[in-house]
Length: 217
Image (cartoon, rainbow, N blue to C red):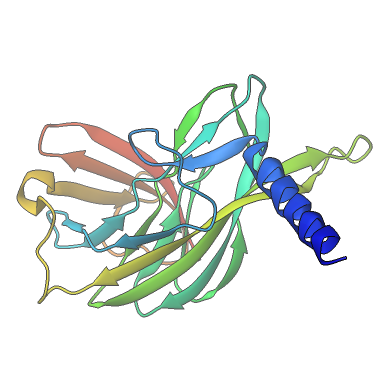
């Protein structure tokens, strides 16, 4: 009987691993290496822009492991947020949250074999911690209403940010300094954006400019 129970639990574990490996999208690092389900990323590096604002990027990507388009998104649980905002630009528009809680991203299509930069980061205002559990999900569309709803839950990882300005130094801050400017939808520059939809442009020292839509709540 004991042997049968052992075989039974072994089969369940094996099926769980197989189901996870068959999930269509996976977290990867910037080199394309898959980040295993259940991993914890300890994040301490930060960069500052020309105005002194601090950003702690995750350098996370999502990879479509299949040869078909997939409708994807994410659920993230902000467990600790000592200060500042946690922002994710996955899979489409950027959304920032300034309080703990569980949030769902919008859904978006990801092409076959595509690798997407999540542009996910903590933007602290001072020393502290931010802990977020982030899970990938896929969506299915109702044939009648055409509305999308969550179909499957995939891998989840923990993002463990710690900012200690007195104990660590910025990772290449001098070479990574950039000019960040915010605009409202009329094109007017905004010094301190709060609630609403804004356009964020980041220009690095090499002259490259990245533009993001930023929704602040």
